[in-house]
Length: 384
Image 1 (tube, helix red, strand yellow):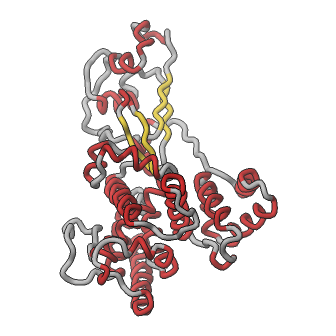
Image 2: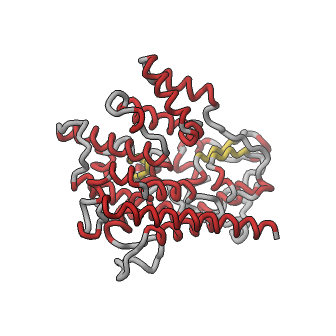
Image 3: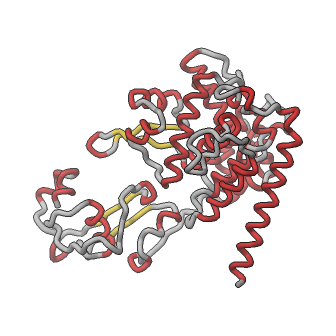
């Protein structure tokens, strides 16, 4: 009762919830953003709403029905995090499936006023199975519209992004250019990424990676400091990257931070991991390798680590990260990110695209074979 009254003073007029005098509904928006352990097995049983307990204990007992058994709970969550709640406590599930195929097309036509341009962009999206499937996510439709409308007429159809990684790479470059035009007056069409932009993106990438590993989507000041982001700079980061990173006020006006969408966090995390390998000779997916390796870290070695971790994940939270990481290994993507890959670390450690293309293709082929081996092994294990 004290917890509720602290945030909702108007509840002080209510002395009790007994005998169904008051109908109560709790809405918990974003279970996947919750950092409480939610230990349903070990937390003590609490049935008295006037008894002082930790928020974690109160929450688990509320969900279990020990506290306010007549109350109703509505919890929103991504599927992976929903598994934290015991099945016996779930009485009804509603799945938000996103856009169906007609709604995808409707979205593009509403966002893009030029009918001919809208039709060409819709045709392009439909030509790529992976892009068309991803458009069931509204935010991906927004990203696709931003990228394709910007590139329309500037590049030929052959150069329009056809893969997920291409789309997010162009989105990152476009937002960086928009920021530079807005704050520095530079030409929005300038494809170069400055050294200061690289520093910002890599710090955001480190934050994205560390918190993705821990399953966190909301970050606090200590998380930013861990990634080398000065708290006083956080407002600047969210100001110059408004379509990527944002700052909000939480309870008690505490500042919290997050990426605009989980997929952007996953992309930046992959970019940081890839950059660490190519520029700094580090495989950050291995905890023991916090410093550069004495031997050369091969892309295939990094890929194996990523594939293994993704397969070990029970909720699949590294699947899209792995997809981005593999996509970043392609020559076409590295051409787009060329200046970023040359900004930090030893320039001699960055492979020359022309002389290293054959070797990189060999590494990618090794990764393909390894993935096939793991799939075959998993199928055999399931069959036995």
